[in-house]
Length: 151
Picture 1 (cartoon, rainbow, N blue to C red):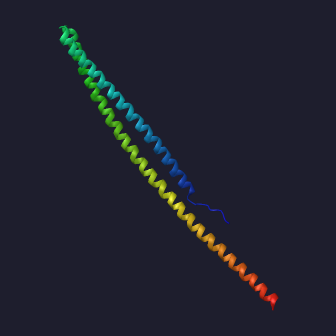
Picture 2: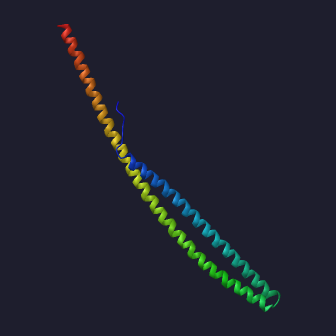
Picture 3: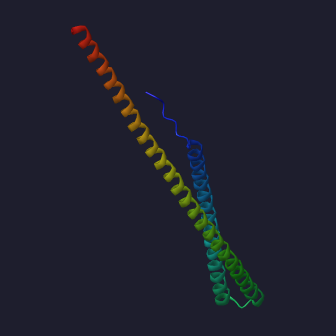
């Protein structure tokens, strides 16, 4: 039996490597989004702490400098939160881009894999037909030899 050689194997290999790279890029984008969301969560917690501290300062004593400092801290943390929300949005967009690229790479890889499978099916059909032809020829030859020796 002849050996099956897929003539576009190099393209299939490249598509599979591109799919693996897209998977790694997607995982990296997912990790970055998780990190940015974690930073945002910590900023929200820090803001809640400042707000609690502000309420306590207003209840306990009227130290104006401490209260003003607390308000400044809250306004600064709000700016940090706004900036971090932008970072989260950017990370989400990058994740979506990576997801799309991964989807395209997987489709291309599967397409080439199906082409390879079809080429293999054609090869097997041709190989079976060739073997059947050889068997028919051998049968005809042996039958003819028996006819000659029997006559």
